[in-house]
Length: 202
Image (cartoon, helix red, strand yellow):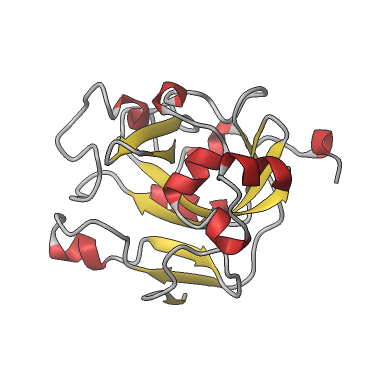
């Protein structure tokens, strides 16, 4: 399929519960500047009452993009190093999003490898910080609409087959029920997954 034949996902795709959007994002595409990657692993951060959610204490300057409108990028800096890409979901005014944890290259592999310092194989894009680096994103991309042409775009693609689910990663601070919730989803049968341990068929 030619790069100009991809269809951008509509805002309505994201205007649903984060867990439903997370599941449906598997296999979808992200495009920026000639680079296209296919999403293979995600985490849902739901509204309300998700103690792992960045919005659990309310609206802040940092998390404002999570509150909508749906279909906006929310990029935050983790440990002062890694830019993590999330896509806002739910109704406007509900702080929720899906974290993009892993992907596989579709177009622009050479450029992705250059941006990733020459890495190759699944380690190229298995981890949310690696996604941010491969797409050359930083916090200035927060609030960018991925449902409109130009810049970073979310593109439609056929649904995937079997899906795996398990607990989210790096949320030890959250309440036990939220730590254990199977809100990390991944495409089954691929090596392009950051943390396969703990994933089980849905």
